[in-house]
Length: 350
Image 1 (cartoon, rainbow, N blue to C red):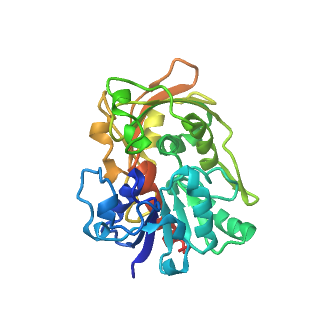
Image 2: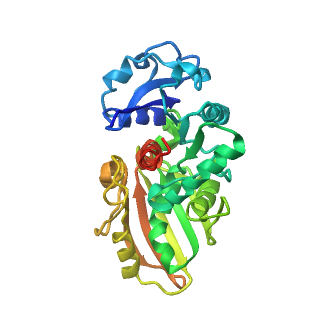
């Protein structure tokens, strides 16, 4: 098929750079435009992006002239079908709405629209049916385009691991995260603050962890989402790891569930999604006693699979606990948005 042109909003930031890297050579999408602040506009990407990834900057992107994010949605960009958004939250709402109004599909990594009732908060392996909200959104807002969002980076890891366990009746979830510094952006955590240290607070992160999975795992009813009924309690921590979020999870069930049943649920979780960024196995069970680990497991499934391990009974009645781990800037950010856009193509929304 003819490649679909896409743009990246916030292309010079850490997630924006990951979009640029992952889109290079994509079989369906072609990078058509890069957008950043007025300060970066009208310069070549290679001259304004402080490239930090352990890969060469794609040559095609390096020579592109960056456009101002204020021009996103202009008619001169009309050959672009998808805008991938990695914008700062302070400007994301206005820019994303303007692009959707102008007719673009906005596949956003930003939190600002995630919990709005008519915006799909998407993990395709879990809730592709929530894409029905797109027509509700377009009709309600009078837009030619639309916004879809992917969840918070830690929420994706947690929610993917919870989906196979829903059949056993989840009553309560507790989770403690150990989150990589790349989740805070290139300049997000000063080195003197994080080296030899753990920071037991990440702004707004616990709220996202406690609310987003309930929407994703909820059911589509009357043109809206009825949230999943169980409660989530989260504690989030920044640790001196570059990439890869690790989570200790305690799940309390309505009735007794064995470790073997939980392990089997993880192993048997499959999907019929066969797009370029869809992992063959969304969840990989690690048998070793000391796995998963970010250094060993973050790139599983090209960074799109979640690894789980240390599955064992808890101290509370009807409780099982385990460790989940995933790549925060691929599965938890840019890769998730690209997978979402692929599914939109498959289903005829693009």
